[in-house]
Image 1 (spheres, helix red, strand yellow):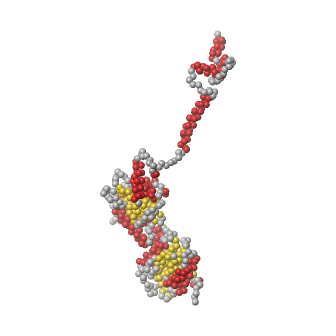
Image 2 (spheres, helix red, strand yellow):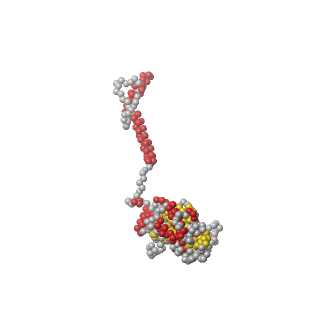
Image 3 (cartoon, rainbow over the protein chains, first blue to last red):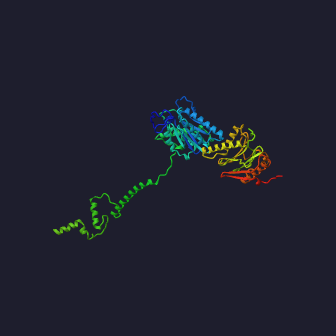
Length: 353
Length: 212
C-alpha cells in the first residue's frame, strides 16, 4: 500500500487531503521491515516470541534481547527500532512505578496499555519530534487474568488473543488464526509460537536468526520471564520438526506422539456405490441363470451343439413341445405327422404326385 | 505535625470503625469546637468518598475536609479510568499519600472503611504522621483514649452486624460522656455490598450508663 506523500509527508503535524498522516504510516513501515514478533494469549497465560535477526555470527547468543520485562509482571516485545523500544520500556517501568506509588497496587494491564498508548500518541502531535517506529506487544497477567495488548506507532492500542508484527506478520497471522486458543495450555502455546516464528522466517532473506521466547503464566508465578531452557529446547525441536514435515512430501511417520494418525471410522455412505454395483452384477447373473433354467426345463445348459444335436433337439421339440423334453414312447404322437418336416414333405408328395 | 491555629475549627471527636463479615460499621460523635464554643453540635464526621467507601475525620475540620475532597476526586477518576469501583486499599493509600507528604502542614487523623469486591470489608487507620494500619476495628480522635480498655475487652471476632452496631454505639457514647471535645449525637453508617445504611442516635436515646 505504498503511496507518495507528495508534500504532505514532511511533518507529522500535517494532514494529507485525504485525512492521512503520512509520517505515522512511514513509522509503521519501519515496523514492517523488522523481524517478526508474535504474542499468543491463552487461558493460563501469555506467550511472546520474537524472531531476532542476527546480522553477524559474532553476536553473543542471548545478548541484545528483544523481549524485555517492565515491572516484573509486564512483558514487552516489539518490532521496529530497538532504540525506541528501550525508551518505551523505560516509560512503561516508570508508569508502573508511579502507579504503584500512588495507589499501592499493581498497575492493571488495561491501564498500562492506555498510558503507553497515550505516550506514543503524544509523539504524533508535534513536528519537532518523530513518531516512535515501534509496535509494542504488552503481555501482562493481572487480576482479570492474562492479557495481551499491541500499541502501534499511531498510539492506538488494542487487546488481542493473538497478534503478529514485523516482516513475516502475514504468514504468522494466517498460522495464528488456525490455532484453537480455548483448548491450548501455555506450554503448547510456547511450542506453537516457536513453530509460527520458524514458519514466518524467510530463509532467503536473513539466514541467521535467534528465537526468543517468553511467558507470563501461573507456572512462572505471574512473573514475566524467558521460558526455561528445557522448554525452549523442546519448542525449537518441535518447530524444526514441523518445518521438515512441511517440506518433505514422502515423509514416513515415526512412532511419535505428535504425529500419530488420527483414527477415523470409514463412513457407511462410501459403501453404497459398491453395494449398487455388486447388486447389479448379482441381479444380472441371477437373471441369466434363471433364463437358462427356464429354457432348459431345469436341466443343465447344453454347450457346443453341432448339427446332429440341433436336429435331435428339433425332433424332441416336435415330440414333446420343448427343446429338452424327452419321451420314450414307441408310438409317436399324432401331431408328429404334420409338425415334422419330413412327414409334411411326404404328404405334399402324395398330394401332388 | 502542625497543630491547630487559634480559632480553627477542631473535630475534637470520637471516631470508630468495626469490620464484620460482609461489611463495616463506622460511627462518630457530632461535636465541632472552636476553643470552648461548640461551633456545630450535629456535625457529620462520616464522609463519603465513594459509593461504598467512607472516611471518619478527626483533627482539623478544614484539613480533613480538604483531604477528603481531593481523595473523592481521585477515586471518581479512578472509577472512570478503570471501569470498576476502587478498592478500600486504594482509597486508604491515597489518604496516606496526602497525609504523609504534607505531614508538616496537616493535622488529620482519619479512619477509612468500606466494602469492595476484591477484599470484602476493610478498615484502615491513618493517624497523625501519615502511617497506615489495617485493622479489624479502629478508634480515633481525642475521645478514643477513654475507651481503649472498654473496646479491647468487649470486641470479639465474628460479631454480627447488629452486635457491631451496638458495640460502636456503646463505645462512642461512653467516650462522649468523658471527653469534653466529643458529644452531641451518635452518627452511624453500616456499609455492606448492597447499600449504606445511616443511623442517627439522638442524645436522649444513647445507651444506658452510670451517670452518677
